[in-house]
Image (cartoon, rainbow, N blue to C red; front, side, top):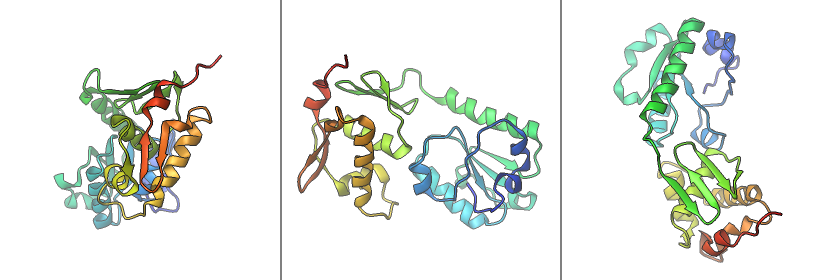
Length: 225
């Protein structure tokens, strides 16, 4: 994540020589949480050390479930400390072999740290796997962004319970989020669209209150022929 105009070629030239799929984004947690989950996050810490540190700490507070690596210039390493919350660091002059090795190590360490047979949340025909950040409805994979997944998971963990928009904003987006409750409505609308017309009733609206996961809808979804 960087503000650099030249992106990968400027921040970490060796990365462009590898076969990894790279998505460049501004250092904004909201952009990250609304995007499809990635394997690794690289944060540009070459110039704005204070801003990079604050952003990394925010990612740590948000409990982002992927490794976060900082990309530093040689002189910037003096500012590095444990409270950055980084999984590893890279120098911007690192060669392709080192970059690839550190990326693979970060991903493999995360996989090794995952508990075996992690929790699976089920609600009728909806199955949510927290370890793999995947959700299925009647066996059909749902292509969700990180925040859509977190919202659906939270509702599924409390089937039938009604939550106000403010409650969902606090529980799913966290105390550090400064957006309005309209964000919840937007994400619910996107979720319903991805669930499909036959299953959108899984997320029920309680007028003038908020939303809930409808237990009856979750267990009476019609079988596809």
